[in-house]
Image (cartoon, rainbow, N blue to C red; front, side):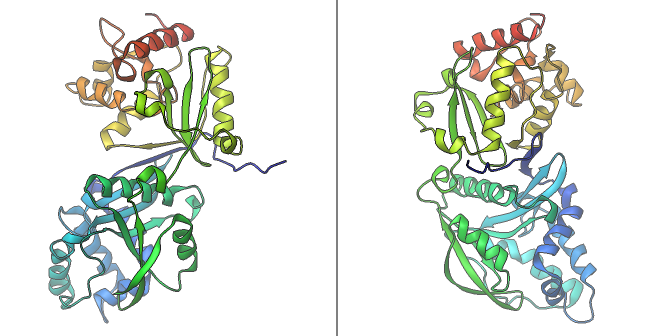
Length: 373
């Protein structure tokens, strides 16, 4: 009997851009990844490591710096900060580093203007990738790297680059598994580091593949995508474009993933009227506003509905009903994030892009739950 790859049932993993207010807690995690010795090197002898933290927070709160919130992605597990990734276009290194050079001169009387370049044009440079110990081995680092790869693709950059210390064997093992290759040696923080790169020319979905399976349900085929730790997509096959329907499935591999086994069982029972709640590990990636909308949708009880304007008011944005509708439309996890319970004041509203099959499914789902239409 094959050993199943386990998952954390019911956990919600979210990845979203950082905000300036996140800086204090992010700084602590970034410094833990850098190491005390490295932080001390930057501030110089006679200064405290806490001085570096204050500077880092300041840089994170500002736009257009190496450590800016604009270059930062946060990973949360059930609303707890679990990991961070800071990445930027290597071609912009000098302009992004300038505020740090100036700050070092003003606060620590350190001239770091001759510091070696850790990156260059042609790669999205991952300055920091860190995951808290208690959240490791849950696919968070891989998910953050995938999000960075998606950003690189949007920017027209075909490589991700980063530096890793020779003494960090655990990190090297992880990067080897992901597929990063050494392309050189760079100086950083006062010592030599291995320069690794990941080629994205084959496409993000090929570099960071998910397992995909289609399950038959009373309402039509349902496509699930995910990994050993969580689901990332749950979509009605009949509402997908012809190109999306061509994505191959991995039924044999899905049989080994606990996340898929649980999803197939729970979703089948739900759609047969045998279950009211779905308790599955999910990974959601979106803007802070999208995350708020999706989280609010998950609070709507079985058999109840709420209008776009009511949900916008609940979120403290009474004029944002259209933005709420757009966030619902971007929901990658139909049923699991129950956007079918979101309706218009005088109509059912949209669902799955408002294609005919989507509207029919919405009506059927609400009828299944006994909601008043």
